[in-house]
Length: 221
Image (cartoon, rainbow, N blue to C red; front, side):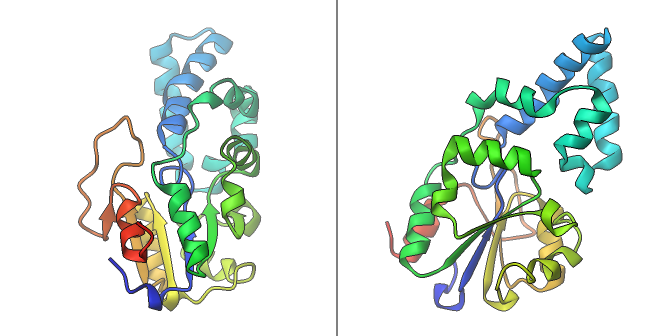
């Protein structure tokens, strides 16, 4: 898929890319509405409708990804609720093999996620993926979400990468468009971020369902 000789750095999204998005979809679309309904004496239907409206208002901003923001907004202990369903946190197939292969080929492996630090800590602790990464960066540390093209310039202050020699892998089309706008040369979209949902039809960017084809390309199969 790529000329790996032209790539020095691989920037990797977390949720939906390295990790199965089912955990997050279940948590925000099913578990939080249920607990919110219980907390506020609402029907599940009305709680879900209210939360979807609230989510939409801040979608694509740092607040959308901030567990502290949602804890205050919803009067729920979001970090605690996440631990109640942490058994659903799962790594996508072939991820660890891919990260090991990148190391063997001398490529820098940098996690670049919109996830809040508290969510990041939970997931890294559960999966131990941090052992296979050279750097872990949250957009909350940078001060902008990845959807903002200015994020990528700020990222260069903490990650030594050249856009022309970088591969970025994500499941979000708005985020990939942002990276493209900044000038990141190699972009790849995940077709099936949630393993419980069917693969998407993506034509805007090069795309793949899982990491196994990249192992072949790198010569690590």
